[in-house]
Amino acid sequence: MVRLLPCVLLLLLSGSATAAETRPPNLLFILIDDLGWSDLACQGNKLVETPHVDRLARQGMRFTDAYAAAPVCSPTRAAIMTGKSPARLHLTNHTPDRASFTPDHSRLLPAEMLDHLPSEEVTIAERLKTAGYATGFLGKWHLSGDGRGKPEFEPTAQGFDLNVGGCGYGGPPTFFDPYRIPNLPDRQAGEYLPDRLADEAVQFMQAHRDQPFALFLWNYTVHWPMEAPDALLAKYADRKGPGLNDTRYGAMIEAMDAAVGKVLAELDQLDLTDQTLVIFNSDNGGFGGVSDNRPLRAAKGHLYEGGIRVPLIIRWPGHVAAGSVSHTPVVSMDFFPTLAAVAGLPAESQADLDGVNLLPLLQGEKFTRGPICFHFPNFAWHRSNRLGGAIRSGDWKLIERFDDNSLELYNLAEDLGERKNLADAMPRQAKSLQQQLARWREQTNAAMPRPREPASR
Image (cartoon, rainbow, N blue to C red; front, side, top):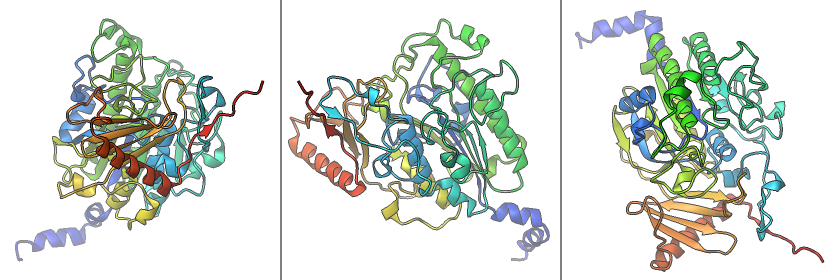
């Protein structure tokens, strides 16, 4: 006891030390747009260079079985913000949901949905503000309605103190200044958008270094258009093959990594690394044609693994083991209860949330989770997907198609590429998962597709 006394006195006499010990951790949530599961070097891609994200993975936990809540962007973003599934929110497609997405041959019309995140939904930013956090949003929002977006549904109306670039846009007109993005003033002609948002992130962290902050850096990159600085375009000009379908995309990935590295370096410079939980994630699978999602099947806009399985890295020094790898399935809705728990906030009623608190998993404690369900009753912009739902339970995954009620059953441990449909060979397993999926849709009041009226003669 006597040997501990000087330490106790030091804490009592040092108000700044006491504040640092007792304040909740900072939160930095980096969301990349359209980054595929195989698009990082630490995920096995040999054609791209991502040293800063790779370092983040070595310092934290890398997840092999992380899922986006949907195979397109807006519903996943809404799920992160609220902890609720896109089905429950009735926000199941990228906004706006244009009728032109429906192919002429379809017997079904897509489910009706909202084109914005309703104001009455409580976001994680609003929850964090009750715990004294300064909240900032930088980049792509895509939850505020058609066109440029509506102010009443934008980040500053949903719990954020600062909004830079968040509007109704799904992608930037260009990645080079002048950007022509609402809420993002032009600054320097030719400036690259990921670099600009990194600078904004640095300024926010500098301004709030003495209080807990929650910074959501949701980059527009690596979304279309395929644009990157000339030096990187030249560097990747010959890098095409397994792992990369478009050399411009490789250049964009490395430019993204450099921008992320700048933000992480600033945490080091401010001596805030040990006090900050960092999440690195993507909103859906890689964009078909530019990203090579193999060994996963398909791409963005599909319920196969290539559309919904995404990279995820979480670093929290002293709490998450460095260099650890988790094979436990997790999903976008899990971030809301996890961040609330990390901030010391009381748990929400589980009846209101579809996510689970990952804190025990992050800290190496015993952790179990139930099935993860997906609902995609809308056509993506490419119109090539079939309306349906999916469920992941253990190693098993079932996809149910709404147009003909057909089923696809896969054992992901043995068939990651979803090539061997076992539905006919294992009808009991398929039926059990189908029933669980149907019960979940009923519990979430999921909107379903509607039969198309036959054309009048």
